[in-house]
Image (cartoon, rainbow, N blue to C red):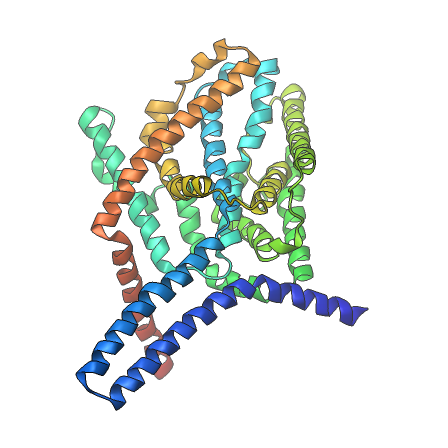
Length: 443
């Protein structure tokens, strides 16, 4: 029985890597064909053979390499791309409720206040979804050029938006030089945390790809019990009130590392989870999700009622409810197959713009002078219309910011920023290789 279980476990691991291996084999076959043509060229050096080599090389590059890229595109998980879009939509909703003047301008324990707390509990899971998606898609490989690209993008928006405010409202921005260093300020906490986490990825991915399913499951469960469940004790005890793990409610790179582990587990073993094709099953899972959010909001309301400090629990990404809701959404979205070409093109267009949407709407100046306390007028509506209006305003922000980021994307393509990032990445690799070689020779 033990041998049978081990065989099954090994088979599951092999199946999870089968698609990736096929892509590598296809690229190696292409390279071998190129090498065969080069050998033939050396043996027969006439002009006719040269022309044949050039023609065949062109055909291989056009047909077979396009076949490889087509196969990779077909294996793309559009459900996870929907997860990215849904995550940034949740984050915008949370910012409107929290910064826009809705939550703090409603009377504590009133129906509207409790209603907003309930939906904000769901919306807060957007940040955790982003962290889990990083692990879901990134556990096999990581590119330093992608991090440099994100740094370029963050710098453009951090300085560009400040420059715009300097020209339009000069009294607000006193010194533009303060916006030249996005990595050394805490305005974009998520980028700072992700930048730090990135340098741990080689070690993290090594461990993730060598762990068995059972080992990884026990490890993730231990992380959840320790850093989410046990950490909640401080909210319900007068004796233990400190953040003993220094996670700052999830605003730290350590929490992103834990989310990366969660996401990589569901990404690596995604074929083991049953697809939610039946609408009844999907509906039941959504009911579970709302029930978890209800329990969380009830605990916050309870603290407001008896201890008057439940507000500190509203934005807490480490909470068990936020983690479970994020996992539910990731597993639900990762399974359905999207075959409609229009839907695929729409998703492929919007998904790469989500990080830009975050950078624009969450810029310090935009948050303080465009969003902060600017949506309290929504409170004039009744409770049901209220949340619909919040979502409508979030959609407006999403599409405005997506349009701006699309222009930025075109600008980056013209300047070939991706190629520049690859060149910079290769230069760093050469420098580090030489440093390591020096230490190997002399130490």
